[in-house]
Amino acid sequence: MRFPNFNIFIYSILILLAWGFVSCYNDNEEYLYQHLTDQTCDTVNVTFSGTILPIMNQYCVKCHSTASPSAGISLDNYAGVSAVAATGQLWGSVSWTGNFSAMPQGENQLSPCNLSKIRAWLNKAYPND
Image (cartoon, rainbow, N blue to C red; front, side):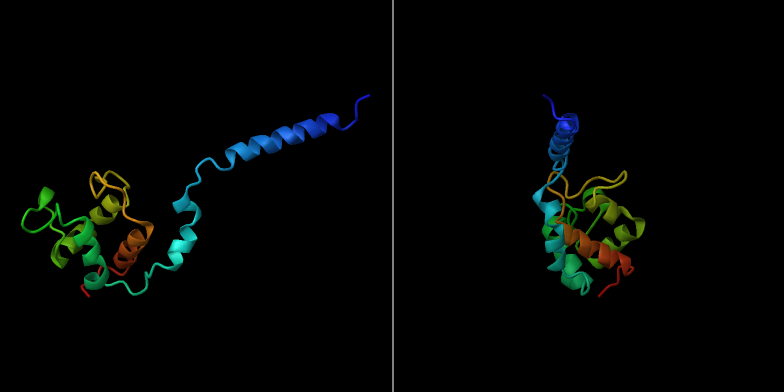
């Protein structure tokens, strides 16, 4: 003897199983815990000399310095960084968006915190502070 709701029970189990398999498709640690890293990332006190220039020195200057400016871009001083910021190329390259070359070239993308700091500085119209 079959139970009258047996088909509904089987379909419910199948739907739950299917949902369970696809629900974690793109989960990764950085995405899942992004809210935790954002809390420790200071994007309020961002300055060129104290925040942006150290990021440029760590990730960009080995290829984009005044001594050897790859693609004619120098990122070791305010004039160079602000010029690239004004065209949108700085953000396009570090955020890996648009038709810009993904930077730093051949390396991982900058951390979400560093990207947030750059975005905050750009949103303040890239002051020389």
